[in-house]
Image (cartoon, rainbow, N blue to C red; front, side):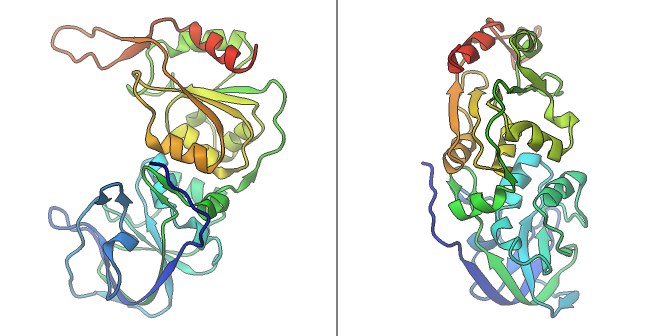
Length: 310
């Protein structure tokens, strides 16, 4: 069930915090301190933390200056946006403080995807990446404002809405395309649907080909946004009060990810989820029928015209 609230998120001030890097085949990274539970620093989902607590060891580095625990740095765009940045609501209050990052692969720097999101959110705090056991004299551990799949704090949602949405530009309809992605998450004949959409005045937009600020400029004043379910829709988190009508086509007739519903409700999106008829593609003997195509790709435009009142 979707959960949200307008309460003030909490912080924990922990002393003598041992930050432990991951040890391949032994333990995950994590924090150890008296009075600090795994739920406060780990990635927590419906059934609890997704990994085990770390094993205590002797620190090889000590830092006396107070720091803020920033979170985790997964490489996947959507997971970093939702889970890795779940403490942005607090980080944006303290822009000069050192911030501490954990990673299951013990990364020692941001990757380009991390940097792009942090730049948009104006997070330029000096980072500390845990690559060796490190003892911190004092660490502030903020409560996460997002938990996959069904919790999005209103306070955190406001903090993430960095781009103000103007009134929609009349007739601006944007299709978030997956047709150039080398994956099996979309539909094999999406390009056919896009050709018809383009004839009907839609902008066919490939988010992966554009810098994040350009993506936000494209979406912030759209009248209608549509596409096949994917993390490109999560970018709407970064827009304050988006006014577009949003249409999400489900994959393989399944329900959309609960995150899509959680985000839509917290951001008060005018969103609908659409199941369109599809069929599996026979890829030959001995190969799984994992690719799909729409039964009638031209119907996508008709469905969206009805949504638009045409």
